[in-house]
Amino acid sequence: MTAPDRTPLIVLALLPDAVQARLDALRRAHYPPERNRVPAHCTLFHAVPGMVGAELTATLATLAATTPPMPARIDRVIDLDGGTALGVFSPELVALREALADRFHGLLTGGDAVPARLHVTVQNKVERRTAHILQSQLRDTWQAVETTIPGIAVHRVIDGAWHPVGVWRLRQQRR
Image 1 (cartoon, rainbow, N blue to C red):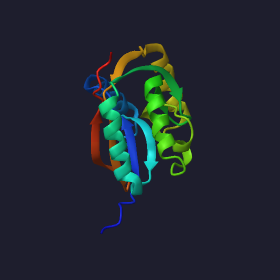
Image 2: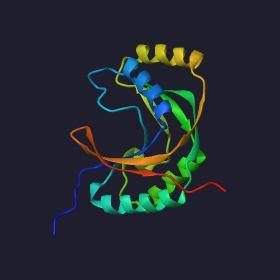
Image 3: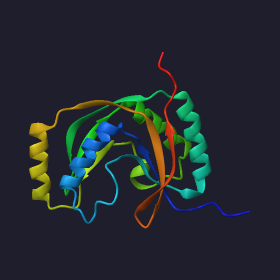
């Protein structure tokens, strides 16, 4: 018998392709290129312990089968001090995240152990003045995006790089 993989797992809300492309373009334009190693993303959990990977994936499979795609709105500019994000409003996604947080209570640490503040980071690790300039521009030009969350993805995080574990498409029909 082999020991469970202990590398942390990042859990993300998927975005539709067109929305993903738009946010990736913003990230490429404003994120320091030497630090921009992953696509734009909405993180549900930054570091679920790898030792519960099998339980996490089984739980996501069950949730995906019984959960419809969730409405979401990317609607506001968030100041990250040395960066900029766009806020994601989705009560259904927050409820799903809370259910997962309850399931893995006691194993989550840091920001994963507190209520969600869902967002997509488009700029980080820049001087505060640079961040404020982008925030001002986006406040003048950003139009809220009504979208859906079609699924959940999980990656192992090894040396800062993501290694896909799986994708679970939300597929329950709305009534």
